[in-house]
Image (cartoon, rainbow, N blue to C red):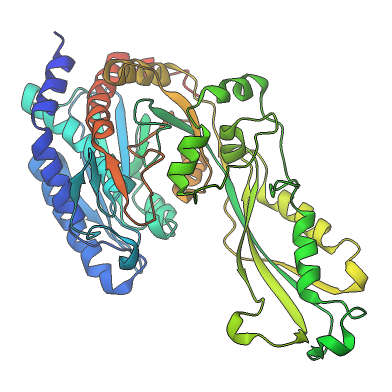
Length: 467
């Protein structure tokens, strides 16, 4: 039995205590989008700082900036100059909750049917706590850590990490490392581990159609006067195909990846259950592409708001105008401004009956991210996951946008970026009844034990050549 095996066994023996620590964190409603919970964000950050110090990490502290919620930072740099420095990133802040849709109290974690329910259980408290458990086991078994370690736990990820780059600029030493493990991602199933290598970007567009100076009687004018609501629907229809998928902005993916993506366990049953589809509703047809490609590598559009009249506003009239807000997920590898130009051109081309059309891009567009995980660090990660999960990492994508990932990619793209996590298709992150599968949590802890060992065995010099 190797030293790493003994450490993994120690971590497994302490699993119940790790779960208790996680639950204690989850009971603090650290909701970063709600000013009334800013004190809870700080309370949790202070508690984590104290726990990192108790774990034996050095210089455990809060990083502070004006008009920003704090980050927690700590390090242990005693493994020597030849040992790699591993940065572990996670976030402590939470999404808000809608109490009406929760089966359990969202801030009182509960274990049911092998899953831990509670806001933040998997996104992202369970993710970085799995690293703490691995570090604690190393410290208890050997008295030290196999490589140099930095931890950075952010307090604003759930509001888009608006100040993270300011933290990078102000506290560069807190990010100084040879390899980064960014823990806030999903596994394709509870038995198959995922390595995230792509994200879609985000583009929000407001489409406005107008035809009249004032509302017109639908009986008097209907049949000759263009209805802006119908024109709105027609124009939105230009952007999608017969299945309702975005057809503007599609990209070609690599042949090898496209073929391998059919092996990702995202079948119709997983999609139905994970998205909570109504009985009798079917996922969209594949049309020769895998579900993974449609969700991770191609664009998608959702109508997230309209000014179409509600039932309370019903009247027999042609309205002066109608508008819709379109949330567009941009395929990784395509620039958001390139897609914006394509969308704008399509929506303003030959408006129906010359109806007045306005298309406005909302602020806050986010770029996608596409990464090729090559080199010794990723080979080390695969070995670690084979030891803990029994299978190597599967390259997966995220259909959504995670601003901090794109930021790390832009700032530190020359380093190996290992994106892992404890979510799975049934996690319901950001939604009601968020949960984490405890078997994933166990394997994630063991994977982190072995990952530190594998990276330490490479040494700092051995990491060279990573993408």
